[in-house]
Length: 155
Image (cartoon, rainbow, N blue to C red; front, side, top):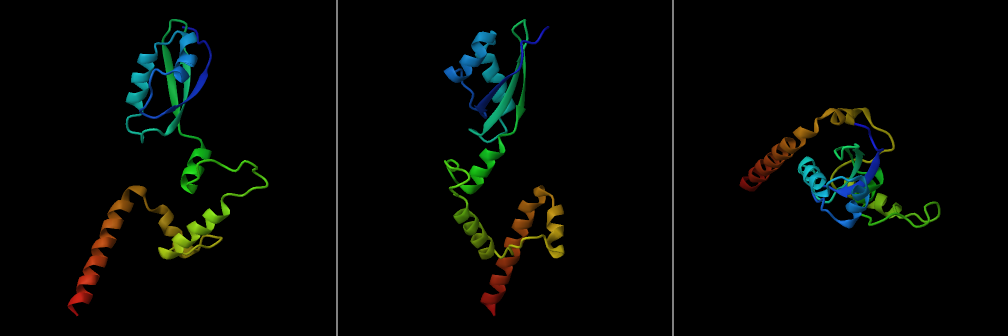
């Protein structure tokens, strides 16, 4: 089996359809589009739909294929976090993120998060908290606050 090269696509997660955008890449290689779409959708089923996943397809001469998935580009994550539909047209001259940074800092302060240019030693332990524990910590805090409100209401 000889490889015919590597081809890159960006496909929405769990939403691949045999459309012209995929067909123009897979058609000349002789890859069955339905087989690719089914396998891709099965492998990306746990990813949030419509997240742009980078796919590298390696077709073989016997019309079989392998593909690997990569995470979305960092620009997609940055634009999503900043709630911007697209970046600035003039990157060095026009800034779209300054107001967003101030907004995020204001939101952080309203939540009781202190924004500092460097990491203070008192807050370094939070970086070692596993992400899986955050939901349980959130539930515990809500229960403590609810109990405190009930105690204040009775007093």
